[in-house]
Length: 413
Image (cartoon, rainbow, N blue to C red; front, side, top):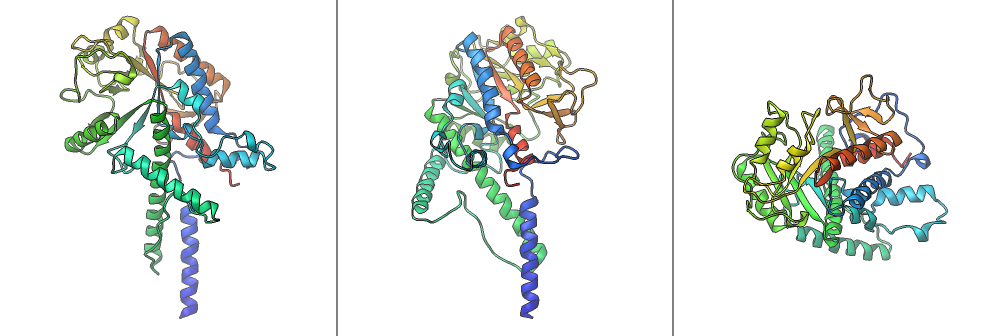
C-alpha cells in the first residue's frame, strides 16, 4: 500500500511540474515551426523597446518641448528586473562588466525622463487589483524587499513573491486544479510586484499615472473613481459592456471648466481608441467636441483609414465648456493591423519582416518586431504626421509585446 502511495505521489509531482511549466504567461500563439534561439543569442527585448520609445520621444520633445508622451502598460521598462539581470549574466558569464551594470531594481532614468505618464489597464476593476491604497501597496513592497535583503545577507533565499502550498490531495484531478490555481496566484503576485516597482519609480520622477478600468457595473466603476482619486491616479472607468469605442453616459468624473495647462493638471480623461460606431468622421468629431473631459486620447483616424484634419484636431482642443485641453493621438508600437491606413496589398506575416507573427487574439492584427529598421522608420513617420496634424501628444500603445517575445525566447534554454 505504501509503495503504491509513493508511486501516486511521484506521478502527481510529475503532473504538477509539467503543468506549471506549460502554463503560458501570454495568450498569443507562437509562430509556426518556431525554434527558439540559444539563450546567449536572445536579445534584451526590454532594452530594445526602451530605445525605440526614447528615440521617438526625444524627437518629439526636441521639436516641441511641451509635447505629451504617454505609454500604455509596459511596467517592466521602468525598473530593472530579474529577466534583464539574468540576460546580463548570460551575455557576460565571467562578470567582466559587472561593475558597469545597473543593480537589480534600478530605475531606468533616461526612459522616465522622456515620458510624462503611464496608462495602466485594470488597476482597480480586475483580478490584479491591489485591494488596498497604492501608497500602502508600495510601502508593503518596500518592507518585504528589506526583509528579503536581510535574509539574503544571512544566506537565506526567499522568492520575491509568496509561494502558496497545500492543501494536498491524492486525487490527481484535485492536485492539477490546485496547481493551476497556485500558478495563477504566483503570476498575479508577480504582476503586482512589477507594477508596484514601476508606480513607485513614476511617482518619484513626478510622472502621472492613468488607469483604464472595465468594471462589472456602475457601482464598481464609481468605486474605482473614488479609489483612483485617493491614489492620485486619473481613471477612466466604464462597464464591461462598453469598450473604448463609444462615449460614456453622463458627465465626466470631476468635471470642471478649468483650462488644462499640462498633463499634470488633468483630472479626468476620455480614451476613445476607435470611432467605428459612428456613421461618419464628422459625426465622430462632433460627438467628441461635445465632451468636457480634461484630455482626449483618440485614434488619429476614423475607422483606421480616414485621417483627421488639422481643423478637426483643433476643434477637439476645447471642452464643450470652452476651456482648452490637450488632445493625444494613440500610436501602436507593438502591433500592426490590416485595417490601418498604412497597410499595403500583399502584406502578411513575415512580409515585410517586421510583421513578425499574427496576433491569435485579434484576427487581422500582427505582432511587430519593434527593433526592425523599417518598422522604426514607419513609426517615426507616423509620429511626424501626428505632430503635423497638431496633436498635443502621443500615447504609445501595445507596448508590452516584449513579454510575448520573452516567452518565445526563454533564457533557461
